[in-house]
Image (cartoon, rainbow, N blue to C red):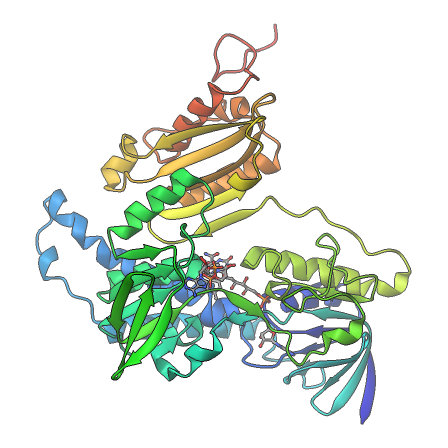
Length: 474
Ligand SMILES: Cc1cc2nc3c(=O)[nH]c(=O)nc-3n(C[C@H](O)[C@H](O)[C@H](O)COP(=O)(O)OP(=O)(O)OC[C@H]3O[C@@H](n4cnc5c(N)ncnc54)[C@H](O)[C@@H]3O)c2cc1C
Ligand SMILES: NC(=O)c1ccc[n+]([C@@H]2O[C@H](COP(=O)([O-])OP(=O)(O)OC[C@H]3O[C@@H](n4cnc5c(N)ncnc54)[C@H](O)[C@@H]3O)[C@@H](O)[C@H]2O)c1
């Protein structure tokens, strides 16, 4: 079998793999990029981008339900052309995929971009497409795919995942969404708003991965107004004629299709990771350092969703950069560089957005943490928008006032979560945040109100006579 040598072999041309390639190129090292399956990245093909395109349509169409209150007539007659809407999602998806391919692999020669599934023969020897590639370092960036229980696969295209939903040309009348994590809520709510009769199920008693009980309760209440939500029992599926009966505990519903959104599994089958000689966890992932992305003490690095560490886009990109940077420098003899990871930021784009930042509720020490909150109901700008629903909860260290984290459900949560995340990155205290300007009337005033509540509960207070203003030195 033909064998050739490169400095770095990157397995997977998703967002993590492409970022790794960028670093290797910048370091002037030779490489091969290997991709089994469709190129174009999960984000652009079946992930972030088509899902947000669908959410946008659903949200704009849903907006008609507020218009009557504003005196805008004609909204009752508004209809949604589903095939046209789905075609628009597909067109946008194709644009995003073309952009990714155009700026990455489109013009790469076959010896640099090998399209097949790779397999480890040794930690630095890869077999792919009938050839062997000896690399000084290897980056594993093979991503993940939707988890579908074996039994449910027998229902064919009546049980679909996000890998199939953006291919549909029309929508069924009734669907169950099993799994109300990120995907289940984003897509389930969109489908409901587009006119599909949705019933949601989750085995646990919280949705959207919410940990803060106030946020979880508000989320269940608000989303539950749009479609029935059944929690606390795992769902099962049985065929009933050409339809499907979904049952969970006492609850049961007959539907045309099921969206299976019960999580994702890493793409590791056939990779032969066992030959690395590093202990593998229950998901088949070798132990690695999340600051260097190094696997054990091997010249092997892991990045992106396959690691399961932080399966979101900007983190996959960061992990790809770290892995690529270190892989390109493996022959320097120095230990791989370790990088500080960013403050965790998570945004669920359902409406209202559900977000989590920094230290999560379950990790807070009730002895040392203070919690401030604001319910959105009285917030002026939210009221004007007709979106004064939800709650913002912000956590700080009681003694120092330093912001630790937040969980929230509210309008423009995506923006407020960024502000808080950047404040935590900067090590700011609640007092320092209150000294920032807040325009009027903006949704940030909701955050300001939560911060005032939090300020009243922390010991560290601002110096000078006015909380919001820094006194000038004489
Ligand atoms: C519906 C949905 C919505 C999402 N929305 C968001 C969002 O709004 N914001 C956000 O931050 N994140 C979102 N995500 C998550 C985000 O898409 C992922 O974190 C990101 O795409 C992961 O990139 P990756 O490079 O790790 O994997 P991928 O992009 O999946 O790349 C892995 C590549 O490896 C290839 N491969 C697999 N096995 C092998 C093998 N053995 N040999 C060679 N190649 C192989 C695959 O074919 C694939 O091309 C969403 C995900 C989904 C599914
Ligand atoms: N906005 C975003 O950033 C975004 C959007 C979509 C997806 N993603 C990424 O995709 C990943 C996967 O999303 P996901 O929603 O599939 O997974 P998830 O882990 O967020 O949610 C899965 C849910 O399914 C439930 N579940 C599992 N088995 C069940 C059963 N038999 N019956 C009922 N419920 C069951 C779990 O309790 C959980 O709540 C996320 O972790 C995230 O990283 C991110």
